[in-house]
Image 1 (tube, rainbow, N blue to C red):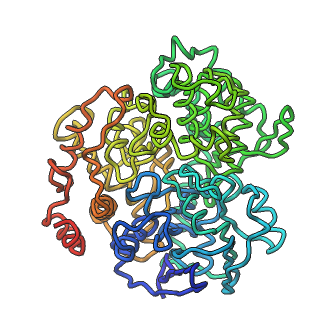
Image 2 (cartoon, rainbow, N blue to C red):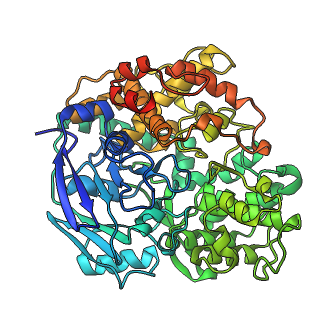
Length: 612
């Protein structure tokens, strides 16, 4: 029997109402690990190109990481993956909580769904009993209500569901588990909604074998103890989570202001953004919250009596920035309100906030009037109007219907030159970090297989972490000496970061591992699976996965090298940066196509017929 993975996946066809298990050969795991590596291999080969992302033939699925389900620290993540209905490219979204490990407990390394139900359904996989059940009584409920109702009915289970945004096919909707962990980017809530799939309910009883349990426990104990005794930034993560960035990122100019067109000193100075600080937010903190196998526990459960919120999750930095700094809104109560609304509705806060910012700037410049906005006065910082607009977007009511698919589509509907205020990359709003500060984000936002994402592999996002030092984060991983300066070393560093980042995503590690302490990555992989993998092999595996994700979009007819970011967001020649990266990756720097030699070297020969 295999170690670390279950060796099989589950295919579900909603049109036919069928379940089919498939055994996978061991070499697939060695070559693609898990998560979106496994997803890219299976979906690339099984779904015909140009398939409608919201059609019956579209495939999407849930993919836990290779280490997910073990006690390996920070390894509780899973990926939702498929074709993005928002960008038309490869799509994936990373999520935490406890849903990913439960997939393994049910006996699978992936649950992949196709087809389309004729009426609302939900899927249950409970101790080997698999069913597709009527969800008519769940349709219309928010994700918290859905999870509570399904837990009441089925006992202690893990639930992933969509809210009203997914049901109403908002292209910026996501999938929610643990009441507030959301696979928010790429628009997969829309895919579930199009398939009339309200929720997936899991409860497993399978054990996950590991090759060397004693070695796994040794490395896990040592790492967790080092986290427990660490000072400084680790205490900050434990106390404030990502809201540490609410003030720090604003201070250094990293947080976008006024729809990316403002200045923090002039438009949203310290006395304003301090109202949204982690310290102010933590006044409402009740207890810590963390994902499976996490020794840090960077989340929190909050109670906000002023709003009647007895239990809600702490808003993350991205939420605070999207609905605070980006909109010149310093009303903390509105941030709590919007965070709870978006979690319940299953709508991506980054895209939702970016789209509201677009609407406000259109209003400011006379493109929109009160007649267009259902009487809402969309001025900067008008928190009551912002809340009402978010509700309209969630329910596709009135003006909210125009905005519900993001700023790109909204600008196409509105016209009148509004497109210059739509800050997106191929339809996906940019993350809340600036390429003017984190320079490598320019190329990442424009050209990654999942455009507009700040969580993709990008060198400068790790600029304060231990990975920048030789063997500082992972034993055997080292960046070129002059990677901080423009030139060959920096391009090589971008390639190496791309490789290692794909790998850590695919084994199920939290992105924040890059901000913490030295992590026994190779040691844990080999202890769990029983391989003799080296760091060089792991990085090359990551490059294989990145190249396949990229090739998926090329096969779909979308070449990201032609994409351009809004001018106000960048001040570097990100295209030249990308061409240098392509050359290092073994891709043609003029058209971003992986060369035949590169595809052969990465064991991706099956891609050659599609691209050549």
